[in-house]
Length: 146
Picture 1 (cartoon, rainbow, N blue to C red):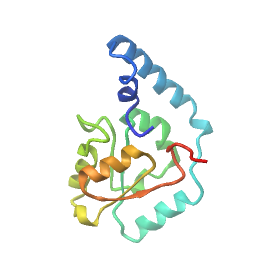
Picture 2 (picture 1 turned 45 degrees about the horizontal axis):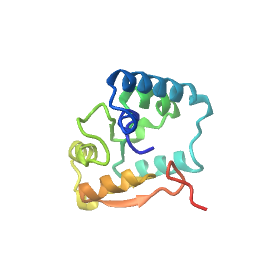
Picture 3 (picture 1 turned 135 degrees about the vertical axis):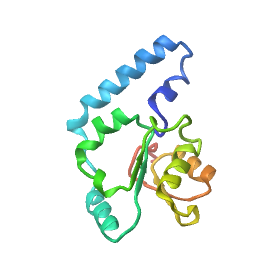
Picture 4 (picture 1 turned 30 degrees about the vertical axis):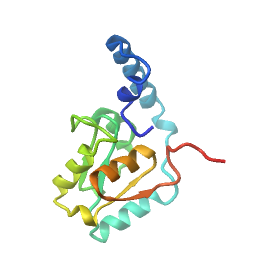
């Protein structure tokens, strides 16, 4: 998706009660799929290798902290990341650069040496707004192209 579920729902309705109900249902359904989720080939090995080489790694996700814990935490890779920024950590979310800027600040890294890897257009927009290099992960949540 690329943006927080709650933000996506707001594109369809302004009714706060309905937004809350749909966001709760969205989160529950995503959490119930955890057993079906797998990582793409070579991702764990690549993350471990980059970390072991001293490359600073971070995650900037549109998932809330609880969604991240429920849906991603079980993969056991968190220790390889120096920072994990969720939608719970910032007021503004992708494509606003705030989450990425927050991660860069927490890491104390130079944005000119930062590469943001993402799988949606929102990730690209976020990287552009934060003035960092971007690489498309061509295997993720982006729309399929024939």
